[in-house]
Image (tube, rainbow, N blue to C red; front, top):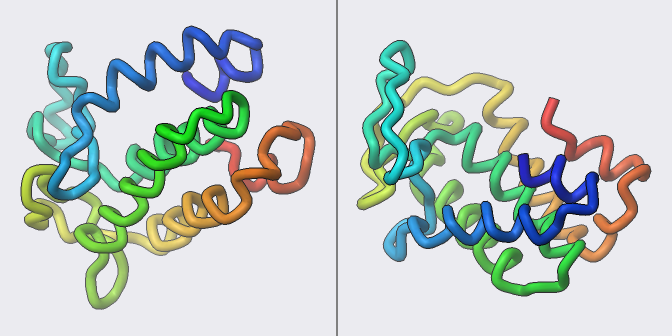
Length: 149
């Protein structure tokens, strides 16, 4: 959503959405809950709790934050993305890949299942952070690489 708003030149709306969610970033793990705490949602098939960090969503949101930083030059978005990246490396990382779900409160692994896709996905956020000053051009090969599907 944030990336689409940036492309549509609705950066002010993108910032409001990001800001409304970043208040829930854990000061302990740097991770965010998959579910917005103020919106009742149930995805029973995914078996996620309100305080669960889902790896896929963390990476996608982190990349969106880096792109928002590139558009606005507001360092809080880059800082938040770096905290997510650190949390993913510290708490989602396992000996043989990445756990798909951990607690945002303490990093406890809730679902250890991972896939090759998840391992490759993690690289996207690191690539975005390392190249954050090059992301203002949306028709570049780098931008294509970082697109969410």
